Image (cartoon, rainbow, N blue to C red; front, top):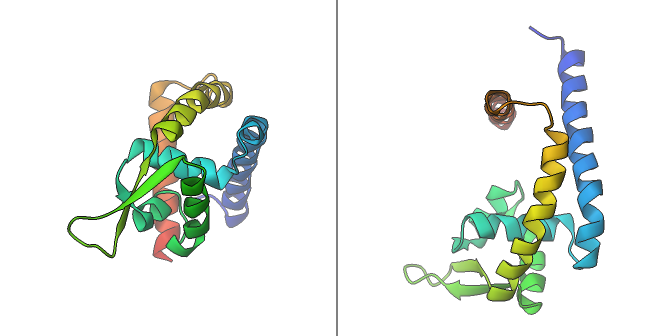
Length: 144
């Protein structure tokens, strides 16, 4: 069993890696006047179109109240659209607009380049194991 200091060091390294990836992507995001949160919302909607605002927030690890303003801003910019859920009019379903879809399509190849650089030398098996382990740690952390 690793010591708490060892686990803290590993988590710190993962955080530093995430920050490095964001730093590499930030210049591209600036070009499109997007924050990392805006980008996370757009990518979530790209992967799961038509999800509720609350589901979008959960998918990026945020509280629904923390994504309300960015979603409204993205909607005003014409990158996303919201429509009432036919089953529950209190819920808005959120989708990428055509403009938003084109933007995400332009961003993805650049993000893929950054990902490939960060994951260089890892096999598909390594990546699957890394994802499994990080998910397990995340789930344990959420349990308290």
